[in-house]
Length: 163
Image 1 (cartoon, helix red, strand yellow):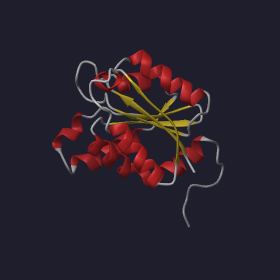
Image 2: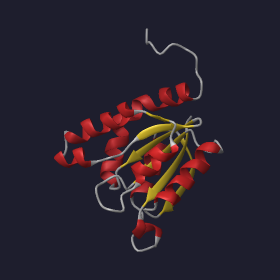
Image 3: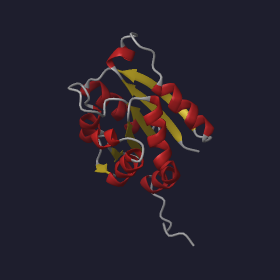
Image 4: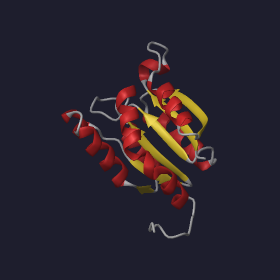
């Protein structure tokens, strides 16, 4: 069972101007997968705030999987990928490539998503889009590989090949 933390990145939600819809949608999906949500939070579109939360959750081994939602687009305050890149030790481009490929089947705007995936300490961090629909679609595109990925990140020495 994966321990999951969900971070919503949104100026308006962090200020109470708009309710967070993506975080709760992801939490509902995580629960349906029978994984355990151990933390959730909302922070503004601020690189320092995002980095601080990602570092705290990964370095203190709070979560095996950290999902961010929001801040992956082209707006001037969309800085989630930059914050993530600043804290991860290894990128996993295949995860973000798979999410964009699946999303491109639904909308040409998917090519504008800048979300990243990477490793910090023993945690897998994945940036998801900010809309609830897109966040869930992107998670669904990669969910089948996540338990295996976390197992490997945390040191599982077994072969990856399937018999």
